[in-house]
Length: 437
Image 1 (tube, rainbow, N blue to C red):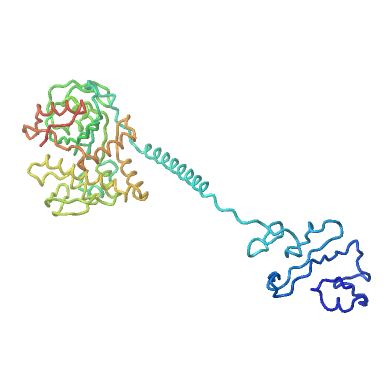
Image 2 (image 1 turned 180 degrees about the vertical axis):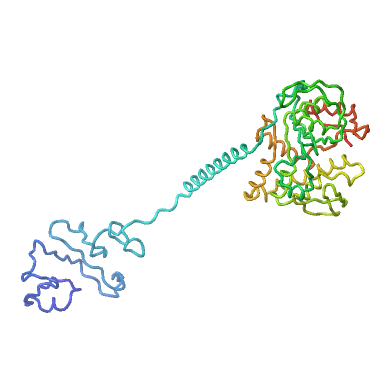
């Protein structure tokens, strides 16, 4: 009886027991393997005739399923050599097995990405980077401030009130300017420093108020302590223009004079010169202005037409300095200064500047390099001042000139009654009801 599987070639079946040396295809020995090693074929029940109802459908493209093998050592059906499944050298998902449709790999399927973990570490990285940049920017900016004014040397000061009062000064300082720059900016070559503009900015819980002090305001020089000599100079009732106080002994005498003539406590001092002002405007890319009328001034170099236009640093300086082109020279100039500061603040605070480091850092650098502040001024104070000024000039607050009642000897005389009411409202951080000229 022939026990070889039906799927073997005719050579093995036709020769029967007379096959000579060909006991098995691929056998290298002269004798067949012993029963101890030779795997036996276990035949199942006879298959039904093809086409009969009980016949199982052919598998693998019509090739009948191969019989199971018994290795003769008692494993019977629990042993699988791999011939039935086509997996000889390992389990389908084990080492050496096929991986998915392509097969051939040794590793399992690639795990799905952990998006929650990725988002978490991305957020941590971004926050860390933001903190590092912010801290670095703070120390960089803080190092640029020139804290040269010591308000502690000012004597006989009024009590501090509610809110914060900043004295903002635009000086005609030409320090560091070349002869060519002086000619270009029409600054002249006068020695020393004077104040071209002075403003008090009050910030508090009831809104902010910006008050321009005309440089030609008539004031009395009080008793003061010299900023460099430390010597006390007694007041004699001498009356001068307000900007003369600055020319006589600098920022501390200017603060002392304003406090003595108003009764308002000044908390912080900020000053910017000609060159610094022009640099800020150029760094921000110019400032757009809409002028109600055109005007010219050979002294400041102003030459403007009516309508909308963008001013560069040179033109902006000419615009805020011009006074000879107007009948009410000093009062009109202070209004122009407030109008320009409004446009400059909005230009600096636009997303195109704030979110663009190539504009933001040059603008900050130009501004901070050109500022002189008091020793107690912090970057937070400076930021508070800037945003308050932006708010006031944008309509969220009040801007005005110091109330004036007349003039004497070419100097503007303040309205004492209105000034007293104004100062009282500022000291108590109340809404300002006084109107200016």
